[in-house]
Length: 88
Image (cartoon, rainbow, N blue to C red; front, side, top):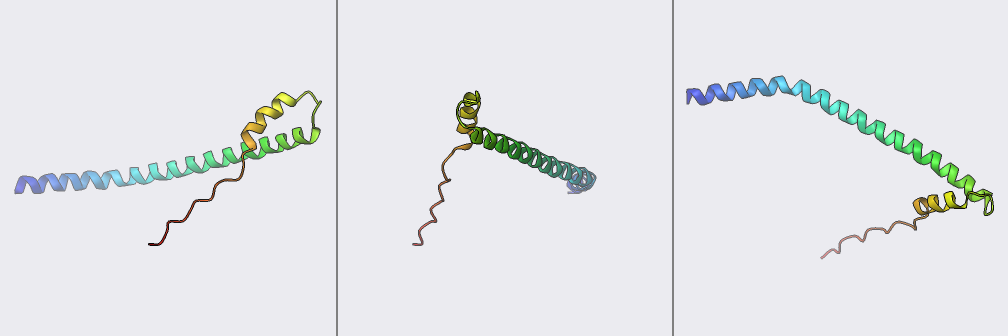
């Protein structure tokens, strides 16, 4: 019983030492996620504006291939709305 108590006390001390590191890692992970979302948004806004310009230029501007490639990326129909579960 005494040996188990020493093991638990050792584990508790290790956990207490680990908590600040975990808090810093969690914060870093959240910041990196935020940065990733912001960068992805910037890229999406830019590419959508370029796609809009290509669509406005119309056919025959020599950019049809690029417009077709971008069209497959951005011209997706409306998203399907999920069906709520039946109450039953």
